Image 1 (cartoon, rainbow, N blue to C red):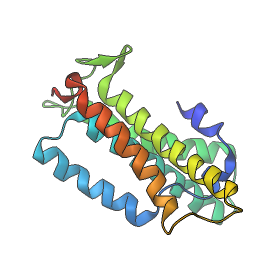
Image 2 (cartoon, rainbow, N blue to C red):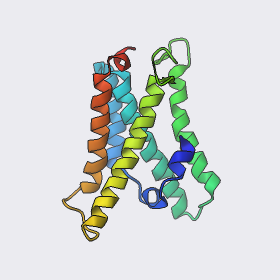
Image 3 (cartoon, rainbow, N blue to C red):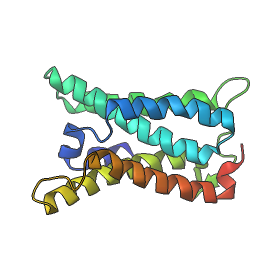
Length: 167
């Protein structure tokens, strides 16, 4: 998944998809969603979007300090995405690895991938629509709305999948 994200047009990564306020709001809401009993698939979608945003903002942070080596970018993505590993560890893990799968991939990891791809697709869709409109957004906050709408759509798909709601 990481090489696929790195192969996307660089413009998406030079200007992160999600704003920092939105990113931290999503991250803060995830704990509440877990407490309310929202299924793991939906939570994974939002975690995937948040991890992508955190990774992009970290890359952006290093680039502003003229640290633009490819391995720094890779480390940013690997570092942030590896933060889901502790969810599968310990005496009472939060998640059961490979208990439920989609296409042979653990449901939570699959939903994290889908959430990341939805955020990237939303950013690319925004850039495409903006280009078609002579470089102008169609409405205020379009850059935020496009990724959020796609992430919401993927969340609804995972919510409809009954397997993803088992713990």
